[in-house]
Amino acid sequence: MRCIMKIIIIIFSLSVISCSTGKNVSTDYVIRCINLNAVYSYMYNSSNEAQNIKRKTDTMNNKIEEIENSEADVQKSELVYYKSEIVKLKEQEKKLKAEFYLKIKTAVNNIAARHNADFIFNSGDSMVYSKLSYDVTNEVISELKSLEKRTSPVYK
Image 1: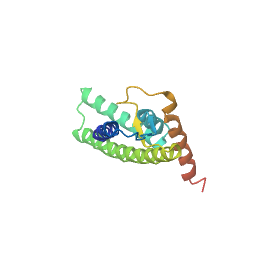
Image 2: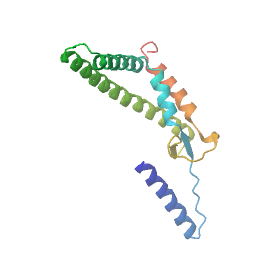
Image 3: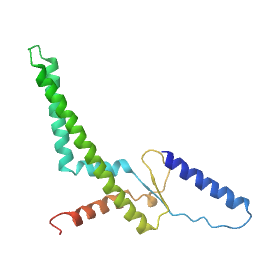
Image 4: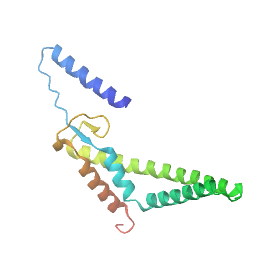
């Protein structure tokens, strides 16, 4: 968020400076946007590993809830075990999320180079309006599919 604000301030400053100099300075920036939430959802939903982690986490949470709601005397060690497994699964999920964002960054960089873009904003949280022609979300998802194919062992 800070980075976006800095970029906006820089753009504003440049426009003020170019207007105040009296010269006709060209500020033809190429700006595109992406819905990062949609791209991340695509990555998450298409990942078998992410789906397995989610399934395991849900199972563990259900077991914890059953133990906590049961009137039977269940060993405390069983409850501690399930909670520790959830912590491990959250760590796996965190690593997977970092991998997703690294892949997304690579795809966005490729699309930015293809469009000669100066800026790519996230339209999901902060962008108020953008023409659909500037939205490169689908291109980023296509690029991710392409990167996945190129890096798969079958391709090599």
